[in-house]
View 1 (cartoon, rainbow, N blue to C red):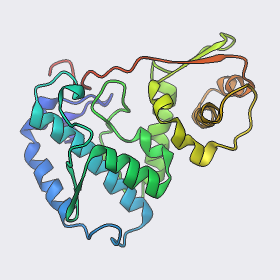
View 2 (view 1 turned 180 degrees about the vertical axis):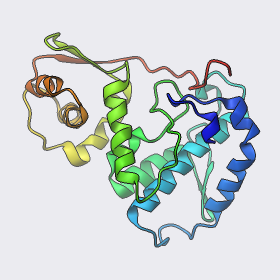
View 3 (view 1 turned 135 degrees about the vertical axis):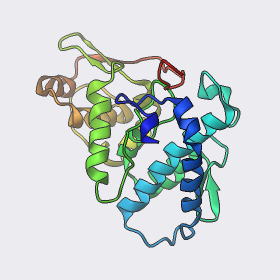
Length: 232
């Protein structure tokens, strides 16, 4: 599917449809995985397989129901059992919440999962793998925090604007960032979220500003349009 994804993570769904047989081959491989939770693979390999399965499931759902302008036009998009793992099939919600976040307690995976929308994390052109997982997840978070136009930290502006994804997923940042120190009268969810973001910011002045407080946080509207290239 690499040929169907451009450098910014947009998908050419016409090309993806031409290569849809590759999805079927991939799903057959997932069917051969030993049943959960006994597959004796390293933790990183399990996480990588589930991330790839989720992203492949999103593409398959869009291809099966296309053409659509938004994933919201697909009934049951989040709850249809689309991702095969061994003898079971899981929905996108189950893969994200039950298998990845609850089981592995790794909040960085949020930024590796591409839900097919313009506001979701970009689809990377390489598959996630166990040996490279930590670096791949770091890059996924770094790119989302620093490069997305939804995230605006204006020094001295008294306002920080963030992707709405941070608001929706805030509870997951409590897992590893809930005890982070910082100024400002934030509730625990917002404090953990801001601490997580500060850790991945590349501009040290923005890191300092974010940790000092004295601003209000706003969240941008979510763009549910399909993350497709302009020619599709």
